[in-house]
Image (cartoon, rainbow, N blue to C red; front, top):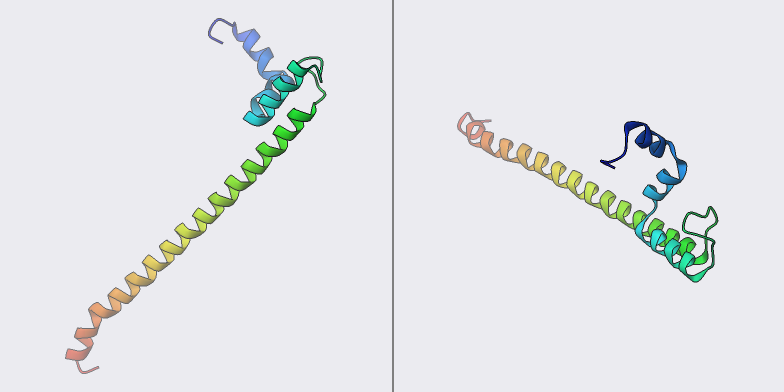
Length: 106
């Protein structure tokens, strides 16, 4: 886009097809190309979706959902580790204070 003027770039950024293509996953994009090459749709820029594109979209969505699930699990494990660190710190502090209590007769 280095060769485009600011006005052209602005127009492209407002183009809904441009945004839709950028948001598609790799399997959906590959399916779109496959459908176009097979003649199932008129062109890759067609609004209609062919079977390969639709299947690719579903696969991209499943991959995204799996990734979100893994990320949520990782976040939960991090929180669990933080909680255990805090509890360990409290236990260590109590152990550090125990000799003083013994010496003081408490």
